Length: 276
Image 1: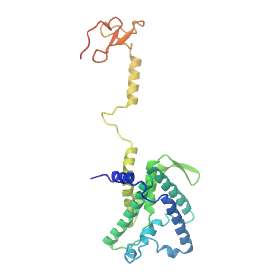
Image 2: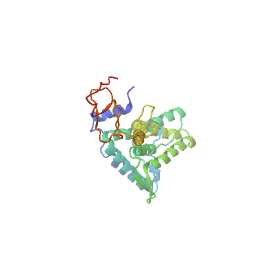
Image 3: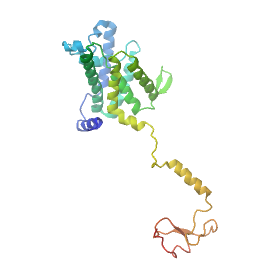
């Protein structure tokens, strides 16, 4: 079975113009527009969320509008708008337009599939938003740029990876404390994240070296210690004289001998070659 990431990479190489350039710009504009609508007429927002039962009755626009529903409400929502716009545009610059579009819409499609699947299984009608699609974007950003710093509460510098740890804990808590079936929606976001960034996540994790792996730092330290403890650096393989005992004596290595054998100037041309 082919790796989904390899399939996506091959598709993006063959179709570099696929997708909507600056996708997050349009998504953010829609977020702001919907936020204004919610401030003017909150009832109207109920016609924009994802609702499987109403979609099956003909309100198909919900398949699109729920993805543009603001990830946050209230006055602090504009901070979220800017934050996710920054994340989305950075991911698009890093991955390319095609791959970022696939990432975003894959998250939307997985959310839609989950929503309908739970509706058919449980018969329950519930509203879904694209909140976890945005959060999965944040996880991908944290894996690719873990040491990037942001200002928490505008004055506390903190690395992105630490915010991701907090969000991951909230994800897990949501699965165990939320009400079924919406409590498993974070798992859908994680699936989308793992498809695109699972390999990057594994490569970023510390690994225990295998038995055959050479630790060059330790080896260099060991060699340095041995050299410091040695009484000489060169020793003739014939007569045994060393550069410590005879500092004016020249030593050379024979290229015709197998192995690494040193000889003094008197025996470099007068010895039986080692064959090992």
